[in-house]
Image (tube, rainbow, N blue to C red; front, side):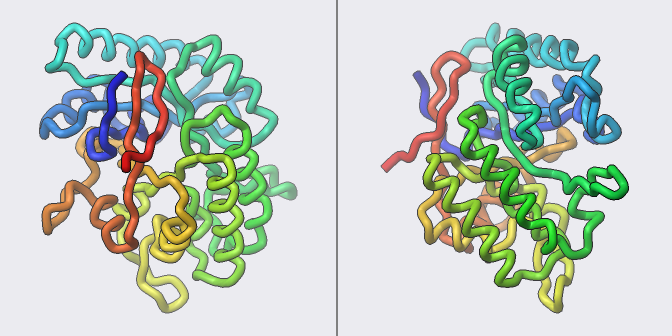
Length: 288
């Protein structure tokens, strides 16, 4: 059994397999080893589903065996290097809709033998058009917060996911308000009750500063949400959410912080979980 600090671990990594990323699996491994501080790299492609829903921005279902094979090949290669090798984990990022939960559990974790799953909510389903809309297509997400919170808390309560990714994605273009605060409180409380870590997402910061409702802020990974999470005492992890090999560490920033998440965490008073790994089994722990 080994214990790794959050600074040594990135579990949210995408390659070309995800449908909108760049680079091959070995490219990310090579990039992760360049600085020498990462010890664990988890691949978490946006997983396919048997009906190929979301296939325009997700892995095609037919590519799942190839993805599993490529990550395991990278793992075997790194394992052969002994202490010089990077620890590779095989995961997937899954959209939270209850109709797919048994597939995630039985086929991805069971049949394919994935090491972990990341849960997330990416889409609002428009009943009139049949479209699944990402928050960047919705100028005001407030009418859809109930749907988002229900799907996100279903994921946190399911028992099949390791962590909840970018929980404040609903803030994308929507000004902070009492409604967003209430949605945040529901998600944070559910994470507490189910002892689930929430992810401070580096990509949300790297997307840059925009002006929303007269306030300059990031699209997501925003101060208001994470101050609430810190005050509540929820477990917090962070990940790069890399879609290019050069982003696997996140972006280095000044003043000694290793990346944008650690800098942001210092501003909101957050501390991160550590990760305990035995074989390919991983769990978050709080080190006192």
